[in-house]
Image (cartoon, rainbow, N blue to C red):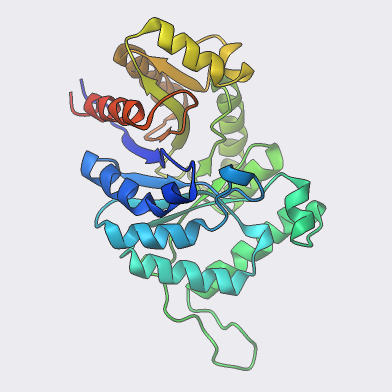
Length: 303
């Protein structure tokens, strides 16, 4: 059996400041295991679950790795200044030698926007303006009329780092299509929701005269185990949205390798998935258990 799918992974331990400091070692291990990408989220004001500076952490990971892609699951554009972020990400792509993937998002928590002094109703407009300004800067565009100010250094990747846009609602999906970027789905969407949203996205691309991007990424909670009791416990703790769904529709994939193979095949047939991001940090699962599961996942692509 051979699965025509790339496998990537999110950080498996963000539980403490010490864990954050150890992210370069996590990225290095993910690379050694054979994962294609190492992904970090962005979370603000969530106590011990916060990860507020993913670009700084990815820069540290870049120094510890050589081949693995380094990526953000949802870098929040509305709370940032466009040119400053274009400079930071261009420098990061340089440090990483062209291995940066920017998953971009808008954010959903009104408190976040209030703390940053931003009107939540403007988030989609700010996202569009910020991304357009960054793309202009990355490609060497004039930054101030009447001057020769341009971005330097510019990204290794041309015309800019790979951009994937996190989206859930129809407007966000159409915005992702307008930028001709792969749509990065929420890890909590069921298969039925993914199919509906994928249709909205592909129809929006067609209306604009664009071909679908070559990459179709999906993020799922994945844990491989032959222990039925443990599988049920993990599925239950993953949340009502997971445990209440029929297994084939659930965003949580927990069970033996045969079940994971079935899910991958189904997602490839129905969605065209060719890039799977395995989500870690599963409650009740130790780091070593997660790593064993990740190893079993990678083995599926080599069998």
